[in-house]
Length: 283
Ligand code: ADP
Image 1 (cartoon, rainbow, N blue to C red):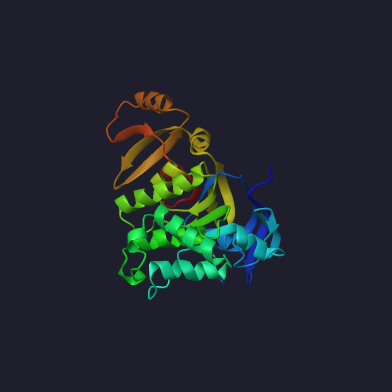
Image 2: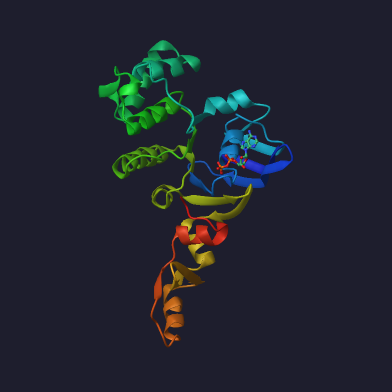
């Protein structure tokens, strides 16, 4: 089976700065892949290359079986994109936004109407279809963006921080929508700063820093690699920490300290691994 997304030795250079530096990555069909990294790591630039918005300086990128440089229009036909800056037209109604996108993709009229109804129903916006987008809440606008990105029936969906700025309840609702799409077979690449989002949605995670992929795997692989147990010690207003293969090993290490005041043992999580690797917090 062909991979859904394939990058081989990809570089993107602006001026004399390598913003993406020798990135190689394969994402399988049907996978939800989470791309994490501190601000400036090169995540958005990577997504922009994968979605044909900018070309790699060097290297090969194949998306849905097509080369992003030489077969850009075929790539576009097979992908749906929700970028943070992709805004819907707030002076049009929900339906009009969908209609406009459907025409851009040359979807014939009867099929267009059917698909618009289907996707508005999926994201629960049928009751708002005649409302102006400027009257919608942030969560509704995001759902509309997703419905619009799905209208031309893509195989791969790109979501750049899909739930940023949304309240926890709205965020959960979007997670259900995203999970449901994946259960229908959609491959999804998302960037996020939310650990719970990764834990709930992502099959595999890639961590980028300064243009390079510094870690990749499932959450459980990452925890096994870095240590599943953590021994922490409060020093002033910060915590020193050390990874151990298991929580039990961290506890055994604590037992060797005569003064146990200020120590804490717990299971490690993605945030701990992220901080260890990048020196930054997730958000
Ligand atoms: P992230 O999405 O991980 O925050 P970006 O891909 O947006 O990272 O940015 C990576 C680096 O590339 C940043 O230092 C940013 O300033 C730089 N960069 C992004 N786009 C451009 C551009 N068009 N021209 C010059 N530098 C850019």
